[in-house]
Length: 393
Image 1 (cartoon, one colour):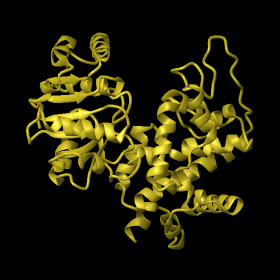
Image 2: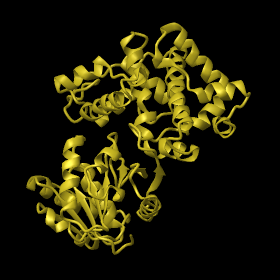
Image 3: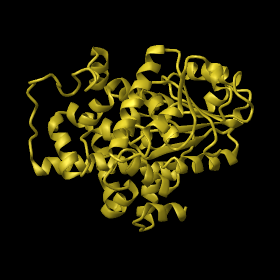
């Protein structure tokens, strides 16, 4: 694949349009396909506005040149000359498998087929294809033009050489690619689950209010957004569904169990910012709750959530979901954490993190708080760094 490679994008929603913009800006001719004519028109209009603004700010040299490389169609046959097609549609396994089966009828055998799924099995999607070895995951983060991270996820059927080729292409596009094993949630959507789930648990138990938890994670933890602010920003129709999918895909492991508080918001249609109401009320003039700025309570919140996040990162490393370097890149570039979780564990000390988790387990007697074997190994061997413990395993 090179700059002459024609790129296809299936889905003209926010994610698909963003990926198309990235590819076109990198010099590729791009075909954006969608069955919804209104979505195509909206994507085309948004591209015109966004690219002109970027040109005015000096972020790109020639908006018109980029726009000329973007083409829009509701005819799947227009993708026949593409050598890479990236699917970015609804997170529904059966629909995705149907689309991939249809794509194979249109493209040549050399065309690479990629899915932007955030939590579904790439292996299962590939199984719908006659040539599953040309299928892999390319998981971009929203908004695709701004977010640097791309998770490159090979299915078990994927040709090994294709992984290297895809990683190099993402680097050419100005992205930061990381390679993740095809397990539920890959890196980011697996490791980040406690940021949301444990925050909700603390709120549901009445330990602290939503505003206080958000304040603690931002002001004391250094995160750019609090967990409730972030869930409202992402949208509960997305965030809750990812949580539920990961939980189900891990055979209902209690570590990923969804919450009724978030499910009720979804059922009520209180999806967050996009609907005007979520954990917070975004109506004009609505009174916003104020945090209780108690440093002792706040630090306890940060320690509890951070211990759970580090535990997930340790487990991901222990089970070879990704390399230590890619785990750190994923969490800093994908969700803008203030530092990598493995580095954070080294800073705090593995013994302290293990002690926090064991204390929670002693209180609750729930598998949710079971500590990663890698943490126990590190403490037992007197090793502060988790990657050192992994190397000694």
